[in-house]
Picture (cartoon, rainbow, N blue to C red):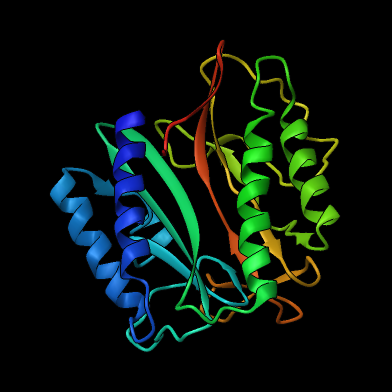
Length: 237
């Protein structure tokens, strides 16, 4: 899983460098697909429940599962979430970043990116043998809400391994149902999705793209993290 995670990270690093005003989300998609094939891996998302692309690219008020398009041209001041997954030798890697487009992103959006990414690392600190999955979500929610933002409820992280989505689900908020104890060898895809406004989401007519119900901005960061006796091990770094 470290090998598949490394491929995902290298792709995301390359795509981050590509993000600029005038670039389309399909430009990112084509570059990612080429890099996945060159790496010897296969895309994890394309064909999954008939999803059409190797990336999810979600811009501004889009939370997750935005479909790349030639028509979606990035503009200065936008933010774009790039979510990528691969499978290599039967093992999955999955990670996401949100990137500012150009140098004119508003202070609110810049803070949203910083808080969301930091909330991911607050969550990772809770990946210890004997802790509960709910400890991860509580760490995200506490940090996010203390900074004036909200956590999406409708979409959550997940276990990952020989399948893209495995048990347990990993909410980004306190959940009494998330009482699974963390055991050595488990791997979790932890992925805070944070809104600058209210937490509610809705899905567009394309049946994939989730957006904030109030039109506020949203950010998304994700790592795959293994539970080890020495503490959390980030596999997508």
